[in-house]
Image (cartoon, rainbow over all chains, first blue to last red; front, side, top):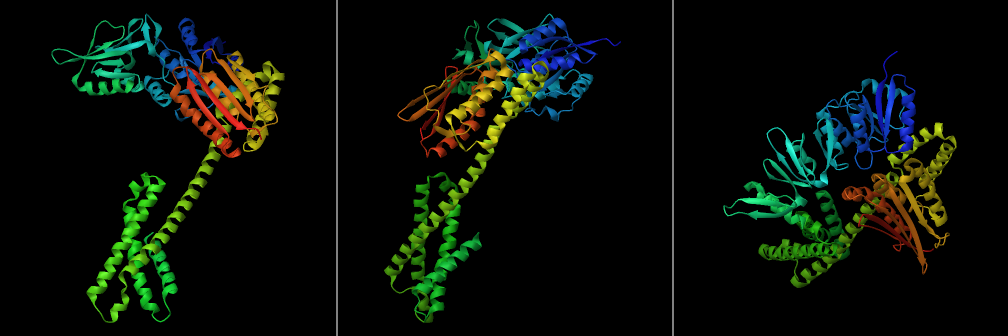
Length: 249
Length: 329
C-alpha cells in the first residue's frame, strides 16, 4: 500500500471546506491533516504539520490566498500550493496548469486528483507574476520575516521604513527590526501609495514621516514617528518627497 | 464630409435662388448665390473644424454662441469681399453677378445666415443627444446584466449546494429553490415595478443563500415594519444593495459583521437605508466595485419616479451607507 500524503484545506466558507474534505477523504493516497478558515491560521498549521500540499482559497478576508502562498514560499521546505476559486477573476487559467495548480469551485473529483498529482512548488517568479495580477485587488497586508525556520508576519501598517543592507532588506516596525527577502524595488512597486523612496537604500512609510529637516551642511533628513534617529534623504529624492508630503495634507 | 458641406451649401443656394429669382435671370442668380454659399459653407466648416478641440471643452451654450459668431463674422467678411470684387471688376455683363445695394445685401445675408446656422446647430445638437442616449441605453443594459449576475455569487452558491447535497439534503433543496427564484427574478423583474413586499421577499431569499455560505459571519437586521408594503419600486433595488454590502463589506472582514436594512415613511416619501461595516484597508477598491451597481440602481430609480427617486451612498467611520428615497405611488 502506498504511503498517505498529507494535505491542508484552507477556505473561509464552511460548506466549501466540508466539501473539499469529503472529496479528499475519498482519495486513498491523500490524508487531510487539517482545515483552516483564515490565512494566518493556515501559516501556523503549515509550520507545525508540514503538509505536502495546501489547498488554498484565493478570496478570503484578512489575508488572501495569494498572500498566504507568498509567505509560505519563504519557508525552509515550502508545501506545494493549489489555489481554489469560485471564479477565475485573476485569469490563473492562463498559466500552465502544471506550473500553477488551481481548481475551480465546485471542484470535481477527477480535477482534484489530477491537480494533486501535478502539484509542485510555486516558483518565486510565478508568485510575483500572480501577485502582479492580483495587485490593486488584494494588496498584501503583511511582509514575512523568517526567524529560525518560522515565519513572523509584520503588518504593513506598522512598518516605519525598509533599509537595504548588503544582502538583505531590514524592516523597521513598531515591534523592532527584522530581515526580509523582498527587494526594495519590489516593495516600492507593490505599495506605491504607502512608501516613498528617500535614498538609494531606503524606503519610508509616508504616514510615519513627521518632518523633513535641513541641516547646517545643506543635507536633508527625515524624522519619523517613534524612531530615534533621523534618516538621510538623497538630494535627488527631495522634490518627490516634498510633493508626497504636500499631497498627504 | 467636404462633399456633404458642398452639397448642402448648393441645395441652400438653389432654394434661395428659387425664392428670389423672378425667372428671368435664374442661372446668373444661381451662380451668384452658389459662389457665396460655397465659400461660406467651406470656410465656416474649416474654421469650426480647426476650433473643434477648444469648442468641445466649452459648455454647450458657450460653444453655440462662439460657432454662431464665427459663421456671422465669416458671412460679413465674404459679403464685403464680394462687394469689393464687384467694384473692382467694374461694369459690363459681369456686373449682374455682383450685388448692387450694399447694406441691404449684407443685412440680408446676416439674417439668413443666423437663422440657417441656428437651425443647423440645433439639428446637430439633437442628433448628438440622440446618439448619446442610444449609447447610454446600450451601456446600462450591459451594466444591468453584469450587476444582476455576479459570477462569484453564482459559483459560490453552486459550491455550497454541492456541499449540502450530502450533508443536509433538505437545506440543499431549499437553496436550489431559492436560487431558482432569484434568477427568475433577475431575468424578469429588473425594470418592472414590484411592491415593497415582493422586493423584500426577494432580498430575503438572497440573504438565505448567503447565510448558508457565510454562516454566522453574516447577520442582517431588518426594520421595515413602518413601510407601506404595497408601495411600488423598480425590481431589484434593495437586493443588489444587500449584495454589495456582503461582497464588499462582510465577506472581507475576518469576523464578518452586521448589515442593517432600515426603512421610514413620512408624507408619502419612503427612505430605506442599508448599512454595513467595511475594513479600513480597502476603501478605493470598494468604491470602484460599487460604482457599477450603484449607477444602475440610481438610473432605474430616476427613470421610474421621473427624477423623484434617488440613491445616495456615503462612507464614514468604517460604515458604508446606501440610502434609497422614492415617493409612494
